[in-house]
Length: 134
Image (cartoon, rainbow, N blue to C red; front, side, top):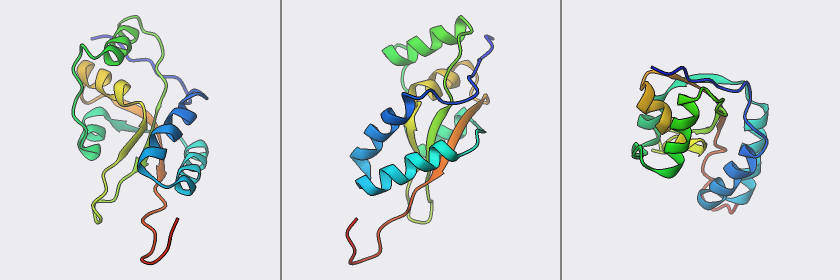
């Protein structure tokens, strides 16, 4: 089994990528708040299988071009960037959002579903109170 090698911190370009995705599913004010939270968050570790379960996202196939690229990096022991997550809320329900790194999660899962993935996690600012506009 190849060793999965991770960088200590996300790459700078991961934050605009996360913001671009989040801008499709959240109001603009919430996006900047989350990105700021991700930048300040400490790196923590979560299992690949748990990230997929909490997000409700399907496991992408190994032949997906981005997953294949990350699998190649893993095979060659090149470093991967930690992923960026927005915590879900099962009470709402609201799934975990993989703001950046979905392909890296899938590639890691194929190598070892129990692998610990370094990630930064920010809380969502939550839904706007009834009668307010964000």
